[in-house]
Image 1 (cartoon, rainbow, N blue to C red):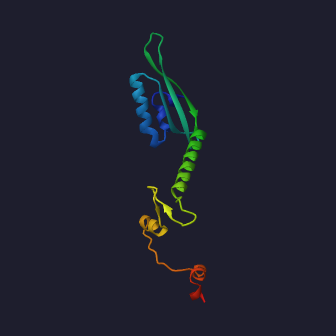
Image 2: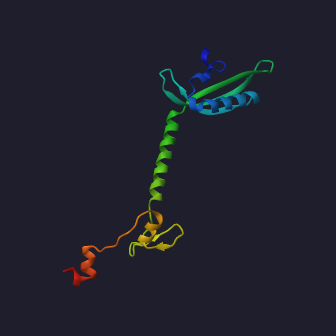
Image 3: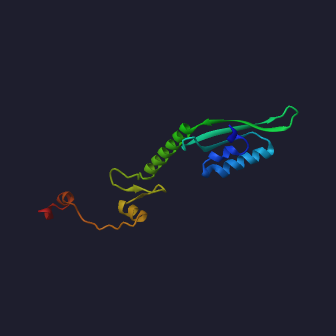
Length: 149
């Protein structure tokens, strides 16, 4: 408990969270207002856990500011669940961005402006691909049966 008095609580704060937390605390301390913040705090075993920290100013018997009474709640599971959800949503967006509307009959592709374009034109405009045209055996027999033999 002695480590928690004064600014001792900052010793276990993750280096990436330290400046932000100290700013929130000092700004609140100066204004004597309630503060809330989340940050990573090192446990006794060296593992960081996410903490929700809330401090409320309290007064001495005669009304003078006496410091803060606070509480810390381990919110690691919630933070990790939010990060997993964010990753999943970003993954779904990447997949959706990769979907190209294509006509099932003529194989034209609808562009971002809603216009239909030939497959080759669309791909050429959106990549560095160049096409060399040929004809497959199936189409050769169907459309040019006289030369398929």
